[in-house]
Length: 202
Image (cartoon, rainbow, N blue to C red; front, top):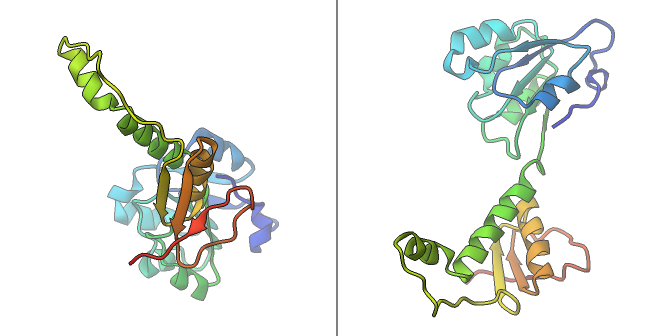
């Protein structure tokens, strides 16, 4: 996840201070060069220290353990201009409270969607080819010569929640020759070559 220049958020001029309050990848820290970065990834377990460290900061970066609520936003003393969430959702960020204070909230909605889709596809292939049962048999000293599985080609995959991960999974499934149906309220527009048919739940 990378952030736009902080000047976009009305903070030009002086050297800006950014608090990274949870574990962050090196590439994110590299992207904050030129800023005064306070990196304390264990602040989720130290609420008092978190509030103290946030005072006077222009930016706050969190993952999913720090709850960014009204009390925490007020702890910045009016200096906070942007909250960055390292992840795909905003469950732990009170977006409305931030907006009321003129604080921008940014996140990474597509950050791990490909990984989620690949994991789902791997599980589908494992079940279709009965890999868990065959692995257990092999570890037990048996070699199942009669083992067989099924092909995914021609089968129908139903995806509930057609967001970023769902779209990646649909594309992979289509590449394997599967028919894809989806349910999402409402279904987002999709490239014509995906050809996923929306369905309603009973």
